Length: 247
Image 1: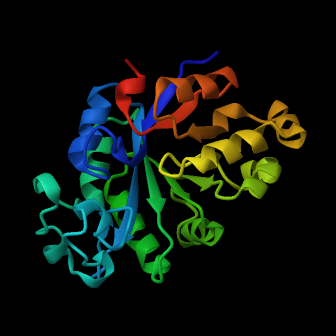
Image 2: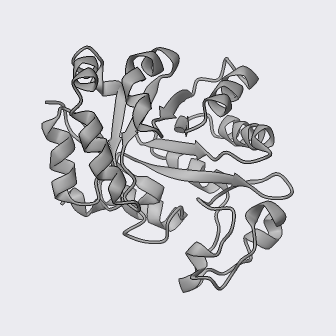
C-alpha cells in the first residue's frame, strides 16, 4: 500500500481554531500533507476563511455578524474567543506556496454571490502560482463555473460527495473531475453510520474495484479507529480533524 497521506480538515479544527492560519501552520509542522479551508466572501469582495457566514457558532454566540455583511477591514478586526482573528485567503496560499509539495484544498461555499467568490479566489490563486491548489465544492455549478472562468489555470478540481445516492455515480464524477472527496461529517455522528451502510452496498464496492483510489480522498477520521477503517479499505488519502492520528 502507498504511504498514507493525512490532510487537515478545516486546518485541523480539533487542534486549534478552525480555518485559522496558525492552526494550518501547526498541522503542517506536525506532519500533515496539506490542509483544507472554507472560503466565504466579504461585502467588499475579499475571500476569507470561514465555514459559516454567521459568526455565532465560532464565537460561542457572542458575535452574530455575518461575513457577507462586513467589509474586510471590519472582518479582520473582529476578535473571536482566544483572540483569534479571521484570515484572508492569501495568508493560506502564502503558506502553501512555501511548501509546494503540500496541498491546499479550497472549499468554495455556496452563497448568493458565488460568481464573485470564484473570481476573488481565482485572483488570489494567480497571485500565488506555486501553491499546490485543489478547488473543491459540493456544488457542481460552482465547479463548472470555476473551470469556465479560467480553463487554462493549472488547478485541480474536486467534487465533494454530499448525498449517499451520489456514491452510485463515483465513476462518472471521476470522469468529470480530477478527484472526488467522500466520507462522513464528524459533527453529525449519524452520517458515519449511513456512509458505512452505503459503502457496503454491492454496487458501490463493485465500482471501487475498477476506480483509481489515488483520486479519491476520504474522511473525516477524527481518531485512529476511523483512520484504520479507511486504510483497511485501500484508501491512502484521508482527511482528519486532528493531527493526533499521525502520532
